[in-house]
Length: 632
Image 1 (spheres, rainbow, N blue to C red):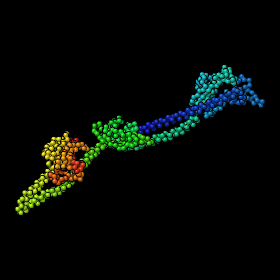
Image 2 (cartoon, rainbow, N blue to C red):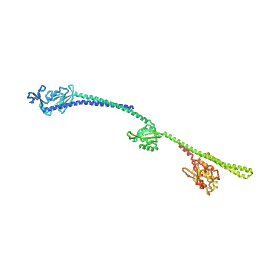
Image 3 (cartoon, rainbow, N blue to C red):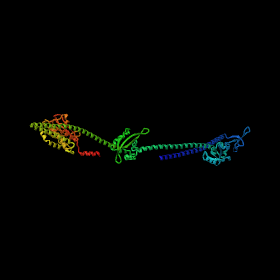
Image 4 (cartoon, one colour):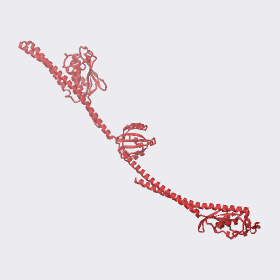
């Protein structure tokens, strides 16, 4: 700012100097013009006087002169002595003498000699008749110039201590002049001599000096006025410069010292302004962006370039919305940018480019990603907790049913044992020994039934607590092993078994999966009913994104109301059938521990049943890789 003020002060001084010089030159021109005007006015007066004398002389020549009374001042002209009527006497006796034009002019000039402010004249010739008409050196020089064709000679001279203009023009010989000068050899038309005119300049110079003084005052006032304007203008410009500097300082402070990357892009795509913060954000300087406006698009991440182009075109139409996109810095680092822009206009309302603001939101994006990840983890945890709560509720309900069932079904053999034990005592006391054998058998049967129930309950309780590590299972081999173990009951019941070839391999606890197949096949054989050609099939089909394994029979079938109750503890469709009724519950429990489902499909009683199950267990290595991939 100080430098700019020095420039303004220097310019003001220079302008003042030019103004002073201009005023001085203008005044000098005025002074010389006024002085020249004095000479020109005097020259005009001299010419007018000469023309008057010439007319007077021509008038006299036309009339041949005039007769005037003879006095001491006007004696008869000796140079007209050869004229017969030079002197005449009037009838009254008054004596008159002929006065020629030259004589008249000489007397007029002599009258002017007594007045210093009057224009005076002098007739002269290089060959004067009168000695008084002899030219002085200046007049002689002018007369010689007339002989060479010059028509006028003038010069300002100091005559008698006074500035006077001397002007001289030639006299041309006329017919009237030959009365006196014919004897000198002149002819009409010859340059006979000249008349020099003296015009005093002192009075005229006084007028010029007054004009010069007035001009000096006027130019002085004008100079002072101009200097005042220059001084005021310099102060106004300095004040405006100070205001402008303060405004620019505020602008620079706001624009250059912001952490955001600000820029103003013209209609032609060039940058009119770009803040220095672009270096910190993009690793490119503002000079690089000024030199290469297309750089702004080249640093946009390729995956975000289409969205950025769409935003740019929308912004050109005044419909730009804020956008987040990524840029690739010079060092290869990827950063997130929050971008907002709008069209700017001039004071006249014309479009003047786009004003944009870019903010580095990389840290915010990282936090958002971390928050999303935490939210996802929390959501998964909540979901898992809800699943566990549902499972817990289901287990509690199952435990409640289990407790009720155990309480109910275990009481039955105990009651049987207690009742027949009392009967044994009564028969023994009564001596009825023949009934002891049947009563003891009944007691033994009830004890065996209780033992079977306890064994199955123990097996059910162990599921989930005692599981083998998952391994890859070849279902073809596993199914064949299970069928081999059941070959006796199958042969006894005459059941035909069809195993679908090419069963897929699965992951899980092989002994437990074998229990599922065994229970489902035994259940199918048990409830075959009166089927003359009992058939059991084992296979797999494609479900919705999963494989569904099935065991189908052509036995008794299951009515719709019982398709879920058959999986309850100790539930049997036929109360007189063998077993404790825990097999299907045991199979469902094993399948659920393998993240699968077990259900039954049947078209109704007498139309057979199809027990279906899925297995969701995966290779543990795949889970480890997925976990590692999610954390890296």
